[in-house]
Length: 501
Image (cartoon, one colour):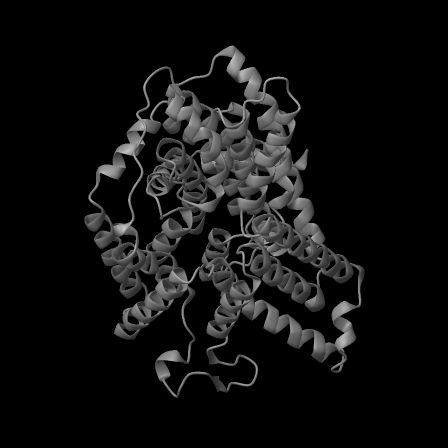
């Protein structure tokens, strides 16, 4: 009952005129960015990071959460209408969603996606109200060894599952860790990897890295590669933008199963919503094969409903893991964790104690965001698709200018602009060679936590490394890590075996 009382106070904060404005603004911006292939919520949050420091923390994070959820809605819209998903989490939705659109059922496909996203996100938000405080209390029992195990768990799990090549994932992670240690060592006071440049004594700002990697690198990739790639044809969306009773009954069980599949992945650093969406799609496909009249391959509504619910339930729970544990499970969550630190806030039990108003207003805003997104997407999805009419050179040119202005406004240093360009070129080369970006961001965000925790643990044990595995929480974390790595290896072996056959 205490959680419900605190949630009611949170709604009082979230529904103020100013905060409600930022919820709507975040949802609109996230959907708009998600609609454009190649962008996504992570880029939107990265671009907004330098310019939101003028806002008070509650307003900033309410807007970020709207962008986070809105990006998923926009990704699915383009996946259905153009067979061009904006992010990996929308790929599974395109399989049956685009077939529905080509079959003249685009409005019903968009309605299925919007309702599925609402069901998944709303269910996760309800669960968060009761789970997040418990997770925060549980994390209060963490010491340096547990935090090091948690960081290592995030590093290895993210690096091994977000790409077909674990080597590329680990190299991306090492680059992020390498960037994180640049600057003056907080313990010894000795400059590290600064090349005697005073501009690097304070380290490299995460804002600069995220904008360069997620935004500027994408601009370079578009200018040299994507613009020469043939684009898909958008399917027109005409007809009733709602589901019939039969269609609703067909989709409802899939929404429920997808939501259930996605929830656990919100607290597992497995790169975001890609894995649960594919699992939800695979589950529905397996069930479909047992039916007398299989529908998969013909535009099965359940093949769209389940991935949409799974993706949004994962995202909702990911916000809980971020708030209660300080654990980012995707690149977007990692950027939001960096934003918390920029405001001098550390997610975890102390956040619930010292900034209770912010936490509960943010949790309440999730419910508001789900309703707002349903309103602006259910009847108006085709209108959002009109954003594709913006000439791409103008769009990406504007993004590039916004990158430079944002970084200069946050640091007022020309050196950071040069650093932005160098890191953007590095990100471009990584993209050309299929290196994942999420491990780099998570490595940079959690690198300082891992280093500090490792040092504190070894100092407290007089250098005895056994302290790192001395405790039930560390055993559980390392055990889960081993299971995830084994499953990842098995999945890759099975995939390659099928290709060989």
